[in-house]
Image 1 (spheres, helix red, strand yellow):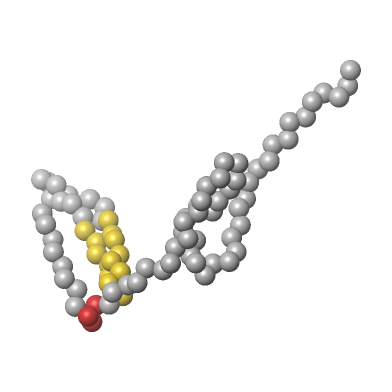
Image 2 (cartoon, helix red, strand yellow):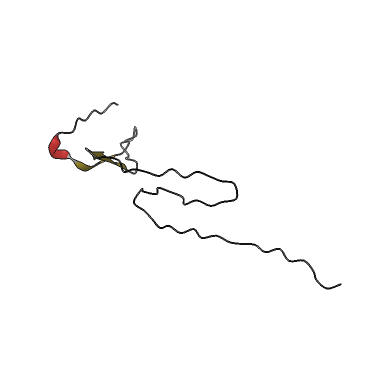
Length: 83
């Protein structure tokens, strides 16, 4: 199946589309949905440069975003100080 849609100017903004499959027994699957962003300008996205031993946020960091946080766990290896 091929579905074609050409939005008109009045459809600017987010447009949702949901579909589901129907099998030979007329049983419908769970629907899946996507959102099209019509007439949308992508923000300026900063792509992180990865440095070994450093940490970076997971996900999208926008150019106007000045603060993010990273949570981690630090393991301290101790040695037996008693002789």
